[in-house]
Length: 123
Length: 113
Image (cartoon, rainbow over all chains, first blue to last red; front, side):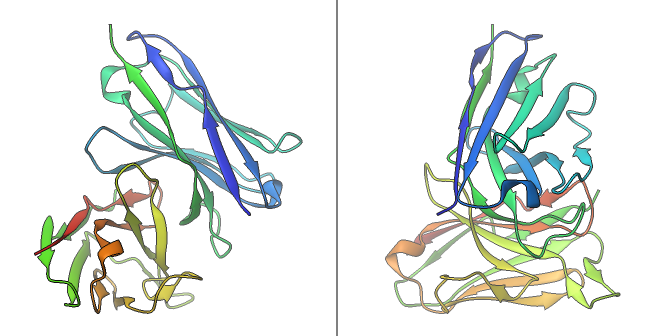
């Protein structure tokens, strides 16, 4: 059974930093692209970043480029999102999502999602 | 960026009746090299993550009931629930995966009439 478990969310002041983690199990983690998607309270879904599988590239939304860094440790089956210079509009639930089996580089749909971790940016 | 526009924003349907949700992309998501539409549909219930229903615009994910169907090509797509059940009350999102940044529609809330 595929499981994705996010952690690391919390309350942070504007300008602060936070690192999110996503522990994966139930599939060959290294073979699949992984992504972060966020959802502000009561709002829709916004793709944040992706890391290709099997040594693939990294991709970012313009809204986070230069502030967020996605990484993965395939030996630990874990995806990360390092967030710096956080702003109020980064407040959201951050979901970790696995790319579907027919996805190709940069063309990702998502067949499994974690429960999400809430990041609140406020003074 | 490809903008995804869903309509309506909300929809009230009687139990057992048909629900139809539309999704329009600002540019075509039909990839000519494989004739596939890079369009997915998700269902999200309150307090839960999204669940994949449909990919390639019309391919149902394993385990998804056959009352859910996707159609359309190019820039115009539809998700149809043929006979609404109690457990289908949710918000539905479309997503294009033709280009990064990947983009989602604003969502359509399906409720009981």
